[in-house]
Amino acid sequence: MIKTNYRYKIIGLLILLLASPVLEAQTLEDYLQEAAKNNPELQASYAGFEAALQKAPQVASLPDPTLTVSAFGRMIETRLGAQEARFSLMQMFPWFGTLKAQKDAAVARADARFLEYINQRSALFVEVKTRYAELYVLDKTIALKEQNLEILDSYRELALSGFRSGNAPMVNVVKVDLERDAAKTEVNLLKSRRKPLEAQFNLLLNRDKEMEVVIEDTLVLKSNLIDYTQTEDAFANHPSIVALDNEKSALTSQITAIEKDGLPKIGLGVDYSIISKRTDANPEMNGQDAIMPMLTVTLPIFRNKYKAAKKEAEWMQVQVEAQQQAKKNNLQSSYEMTLYELHQADKLMDLYENQLERIDQATKLYVSGFANNRANFEEILTMNQQKILIQTQQLEALKNGFIAQAQLEYLLSNKED
Image (cartoon, rainbow, N blue to C red; front, side, top):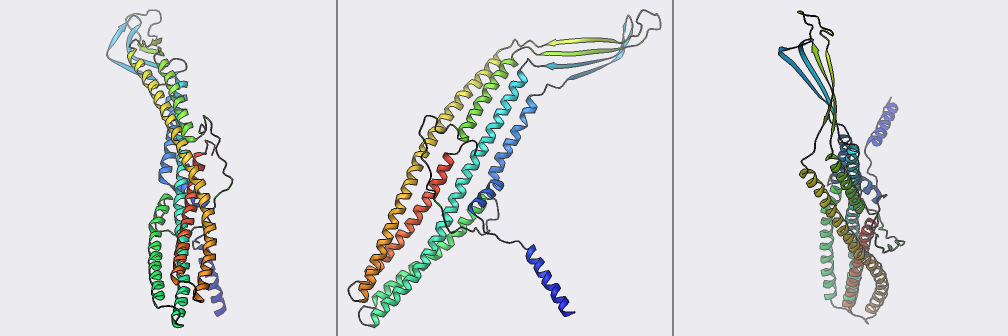
């Protein structure tokens, strides 16, 4: 009986563990997909696209037919009998091609909204990568500072050993203690900075700001980014540019619709009258109901409103063309600076790598010289400070390069991405 209960407890524990949520390490790509799915601004942009799609069926439909019912309080006498009631049904038809032009304009605008969504998603990815890089550098800097504390502990032992042997003053130990206190404070400040950075990152993904953000151990800079060919239409396929192309197409279709709206509209209908039979006479077709086909034509003789609407659309085309050129200029300007920043980061990282190798060599020589009374302890601490500074600059260069890479990928994106 005891064994059976124990077995049930084990099974229950396994079920509980399997049912419990497991915090899995997420990659940067996982975070990007989560942001694309949950970011509220991006959701709003996509909802705007879906709403724009519903415009086309509205503008491509015929106007509702009109049904008129007339009942006479006092019946009107006709030769065939008294007219009791009258029904009129009328359907208006716009000029040929009007509905198609209106639909084309609505579809083009919906396409523009979708491309705006694509562009906003790409911009969101840049922001997510930027926050991710900041967290990565913060974690690496904290680890670097904590490692430095261990190095300073070993230097303290070296300074203390020199003092005990009578070869160095006690002030060396005090100097190391000052460095250690400053390093501990820096570590605490850096750790407290992670919480607001995590909150910013989580809010981009529209999740609880207190959630832990797991960062991978490496931040990869691609080495095969090819310089974009500089042509007149270098950014012609960028979503923000193509969206404005669609806006211009929509305005062209809108002008066509305005022109056709200024042409006559035709109405087709039927009029049906109920006639009662005469009792005082019996003429031919006595009491027969009357059916009368009807044709209506609108006369658009007041032209000012059509001229003004067309002129408005033409000026809007001019506005969109200017916006498009300004956008191309901004993309080109951002590209030039981003490319410079990427190359700068690459060169700085090579420089810092070489400097760190030389500093390590110099530090070994200083430590060896201090042990043999041929070097000043101050020089060891100076070298250590220099090393920490270059290591943090190296991390900063990596972050800047990663962000520039993300920005370059956004600038070189096209409408199919």
